[in-house]
Amino acid sequence: MRRYGPAVLLALVGAAILRVSLFSELYLRYVQAGLRPYLVVSGAALVLLAVAVAGVARGAAVHEAEGHEGGDGDGGGDGHEGAGDHAGHSHSDTHSHGPAGPRVAWFLTLPALALLLFPPPALGSYSAEREAAQRAAQGVGTFPDLPSGNPVDLTLGEFGSRAVYDSGRSLKGRTVRLTGFVTRDGDGTWYVTRLLVSCCAADATTAKAEVRGVEAPPVDTWVTVTGTWHPEGELGSTEAWPPVVDVTSLRRVRQPDNPYEKR
Image (cartoon, rainbow, N blue to C red; front, side):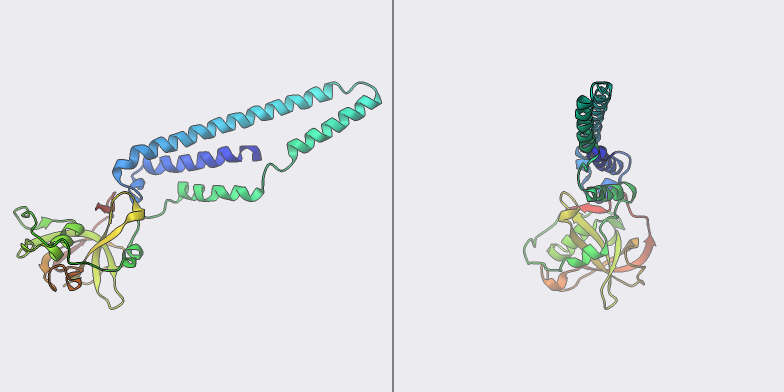
């Protein structure tokens, strides 16, 4: 059975990749939507490779079994030949049933099996809190006008950019609607937060807005808040980050299929 170990490992990894990319939207927890075709092709290639490796292993097993049968059929000669056949058979048995590799190698299947059965969640408050709120005074300038009507739906990234860097103060007097998950500081300050990615979860950075006026739901709860921008500090300064929103309404929502914003 150990000869099929590599095939089993390849099949598990391929199946896990196909599960998150072809049969669900779970891949969006790790990479941008545009990378889906590459994941599907990679998963399918691994499964096909597993089938090929299993076929080679099976062919080797059949060939070995036929060798045993040939050795048994020639055992009717004199005692000397019988002894030789016995020695050859013993050597063959040792080759067939000896260790095919360290048994600990089977533990390599556990991560693949875990990914197949229990895909890890999207990054959340822990990842967001690891990024220090360090902002430089670069990028200050005017932004395009916001769409007419209130409230206006904005990403956390766009809201933060306009609040910190927009010299035209396009957020002033406007009602905004923001969606993200809840993070909290040790002093009780809480934020609606989103992670921004360029390619995959490994390059995630944080966009968030401090929420005032309503009580905080539990950490990592997804919410949509509606309110108005509360200016703090000078444009481009560290005091202006994170931006503040005075919230008039809060609604709990489900985590979106794609929990990240495009940076």
